[in-house]
Length: 96
Image (cartoon, rainbow, N blue to C red; front, side, top):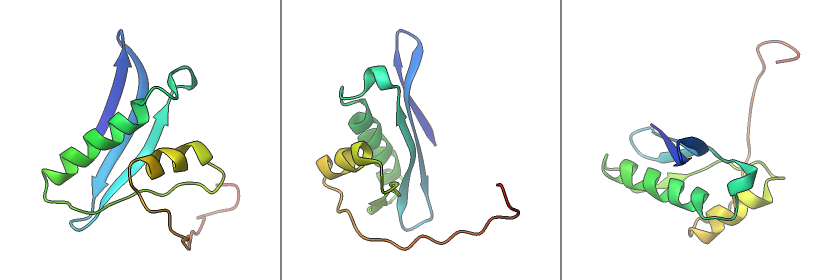
């Protein structure tokens, strides 16, 4: 489910929460640059977690790009453990 944060009708932050029956995924967390460091990201994640918890999900995860220190800091501040991870992908064609 998508969640949005608004300021006077203007969308300033979003997050997508999904689950696979076992684990909740916090995806696509983004906050407009003018609104960063205002706890919008933290509130979006916590709201997303509450919704997933209501579906019976008790474990949460997020994939964070290695160079995204700001996102890593948000998740650390929320008690997430940062783990080394192997990420595999395959492109359907070059340039995708």
